[in-house]
Length: 484
Image (tube, rainbow, N blue to C red; front, side):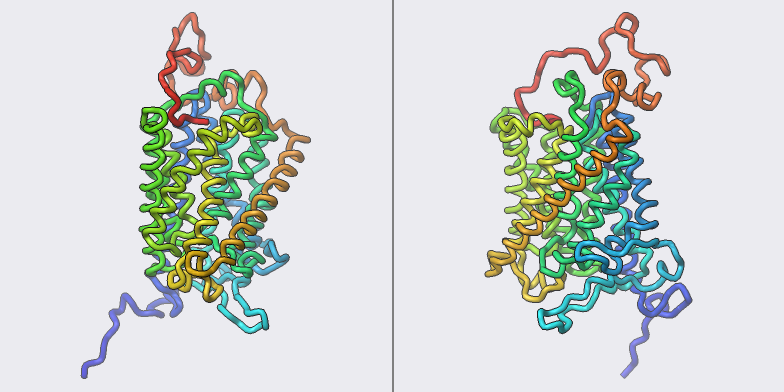
């Protein structure tokens, strides 16, 4: 009987760069996933933010996203990665330290605090040790941290002092994001207790939504004229950014099993099922109640679907993804279009892009639905706690764990974001000056998105006519979803 010969391309130890623990397929998928998530931010959200806002804020909004991405990368590798995924310092925090040395980055990836033990102290699940180098893990987790800050920025577009934002990014990353990441992913107390967050429904979306609306409260509202009229300056480019966001979510959810396996395939398929369902439901609701399908509304529905499926992407069945899509297309629509307009507190806080509804509400909804629909066999493929299951399969306690986990993330972000904004305000004004709010990009950056008149020339109604953001047009919308 002939012996099977493994082709040289698939062998380990073919060179010093291919150790025996390296799985080329897993490493390839992890780097591709990281690149897809990075593309969601740059250029995805850079384009989306620069297009969905009023023309005079296009440059500022796009740059806030670009700056946040770059700042997070440096902070992440300098100290924040190990605070999120390193050795345990506190039940909710890892020990800070750099992730820059060669010896650290080329060794096999591991998450040292993720070993899970039974109550009697015996090992239940060993720590995570994916078959690729630490460098791949550090970069993959970095792009998740970066997009969280960029999503948060959506709440304060059109008025936050750019200098205050430059200070806010590293502070919030250090004292808020790392806590959620370690607690739920890095081996912290919520991870050990069995709270499920497959790919960031709580760590990324719930935290960015709560921190966003909290920061919006401290920064203050946009100018009166901007709150009354804030049309997108380029709907087609907005759709291009939204498309990058949607397709990039394949890496967002598909990369979190840390392997190119059947669980990652389930996660990718469920992601698209839920997003498509949610987009359609949101659009139908706009048509039913306002007689018009809103393109912005369709994008909001797409986002809420992507957010809702994230905490359970690889853990639920396809039919559950459709149910989650129906709810993510309707519940956030209701909070944004009905509750927001009747609740005085929400009306006073100027959440520019409605991040509270699209990320906090949808993220919380996805978390508790995961606690209901997590399927036992799929859960066993991914979760460190054996016999995990949703309430629909007899795991009622999981539903309660999800609520408690969300409560911690909400409370931490409310308090820490408020402290950060208060401290920054002592040194730097959080809100732009009245002159900057009136003029926009030209006053803040000395640059404009579209040269509709002379370069460097401020708008003059006597010379340039009525082609400006402030032009009053007949109100054509009958109430369909618009930028909040």
